[in-house]
Image (tube, rainbow, N blue to C red):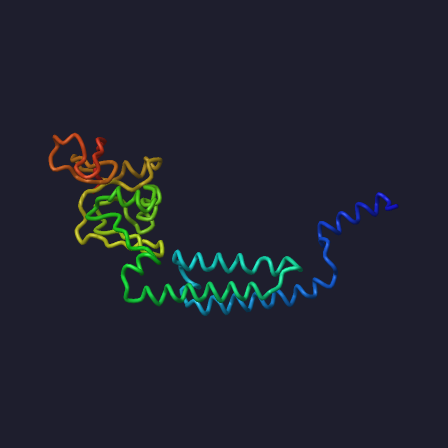
Length: 227
């Protein structure tokens, strides 16, 4: 009969080492080395972009590889050959998509997505914002990171296919909707404002002072633009 102390010792051994034979830890060195080399080879075979910003299909390929290599490392009853087969299939599919996308705009958009125009002439495209599921807080934070205080400074803002933002500034800024945080009242009060009004939702300047709703987004709330 096992003593109480022996039972506790067995529990700790099971938690730390599992119910695996000691020989498996030597085998584990071989498995991890093989899988690591396989992963490096697979990522090199799928192109240099795998080491940079990932597109949708490249992210799917990377997740598939991660799922394939997990079991051979942790399960002694699983061989390493299935991981090799999965890696070859993933590489083949990813390279096939990349080849077909070259010179084929429809395939390129299907595989990688397309560029989104979020701001045009200081006005936010609310429909495009909704389509790409981008919040106004994140948009304004991105603008502030480029030193932008209001939308009147922005000619174009693109959301690229890799999730990065590209901004073109106006040569001659016009008054626009503030992108500064509302809580920073002290800094906001130091900004020069015009007497005209601007839509608080999209930054559209109304054609005349009598308009009660924005002609761009339909919003009915206006504020003074920063200049």
